[in-house]
Length: 117
Ligand code: TYC
Image 1 (spheres, rainbow, N blue to C red):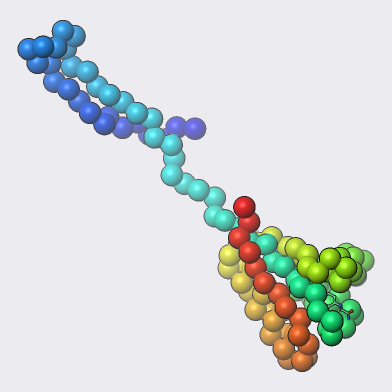
Image 2 (tube, rainbow, N blue to C red):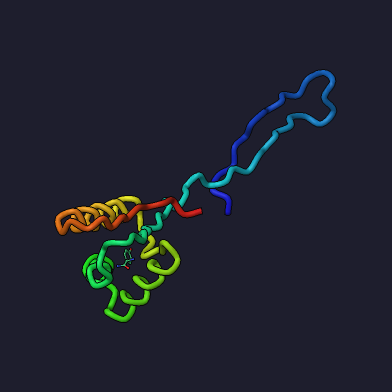
């Protein structure tokens, strides 16, 4: 998709020029980019109770109980899982909410974010 055309050089007709003016025109791509998305990751640990993790996933990520339980088990078995993909600001808010909630309940649960490829 082309947004604009820019004349980069314009050569006036000179004594050695046989065809008059020559314009060199290049197409320029639009510079608008979609904002990057961020994966929010939940990490496994040996101490946070499974029910607490399920509650976190229901409360902060809008998952139903079955979905939350499934993702909790994935984290438990694999070590980590992506629990959602968001804008930078929303991802940061989710991470802060989870980390604060875990700390308040004295669980070592870790939640981080990572830019999507
Ligand atoms: N591994 C924890 C346990 O056995 C459960 C757990 C699951 C902890 C997911 C953290 O992100 C987590 N109690």
